[in-house]
Length: 264
Ligand code: PGA
Image (cartoon, rainbow, N blue to C red; front, side, top):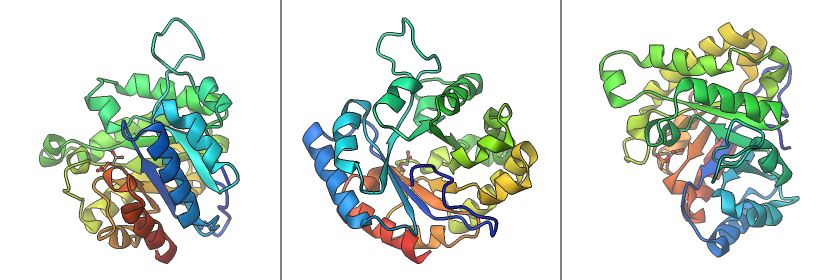
C-alpha cells in the first residue's frame, strides 16, 4: 500500500495516484483535521492511491492520524546528506524514521524559489531512494522555455536525475509533470498538452530505466488541478494521477478529485 509502484502488474496497469501537496499551509490542528477528512473520504479504497505531503513539522501528527488508513505520508523535500551540520535541514533517514513513505524532489518551488539545480536534485533523489523511501521526481518547464519550444529538452535534462538508478529501483519512483506556468496560477495545461508532455516523459524514462519500468511508472500531472478539470486530465492515457496544491487544502475540493480518480 505504501510504495508508489505497488499494485502494478505485468498487464502494465497503473493505479491512479492522487497526491495533496499542502506546501507551507495549515496548522497542527487543521492539518490533522484535513488528514482525517482525506482518510475518511478515501475510505481505504484499493483502486487508487492517495498521498498527502504536509509541512515537515506536522509529519508526526498527520502520520498518527493516517496510520492504518491507506493514505500514505509524504514529505515535500529533504537534504541530500544523511546527517551533518546543516542547520534547519531534514535528512531522508529522519523522514523515514517519522513514518514518511514518499518524498518529493525537484518541485518547481525548490528549483525556482530556492535555486536548486539539477545536480542537487539528483543528489536528493539518490538520498531518498538510498534511504528506502519512494521518490516522486517533479519536472516541468517555465513559460519562457515552452514559448521557446524547449519543453522536451528541459524535461529530458530534469529526468536525467534518474540516470544513476537501476530498473530494480523503478517501482519506487513516480514522476510528476508540473509545468511551472500552471502551478498556483489557475492556468491548467489542456489535457492534450499534458498528454503530450507525459508521453514524452514516458519515452524518456524508457530510455533511462527500460520499457518495462516506463510502462508501469505512475506519471502525475500537477498545476492548478481542481474538481472541474481533474476528470479530463486523468482520462488521458499517460496521465496516471494528480499532484494537487491549492485544491488539496480543503476536502470540498480534494474529495471530488479523489472521486475523479476512481472514475478515470
Ligand atoms: P497547484 O500546485 O495545484 O496549487 O497549482 C501544484 C503543486 O505545486 O504541486
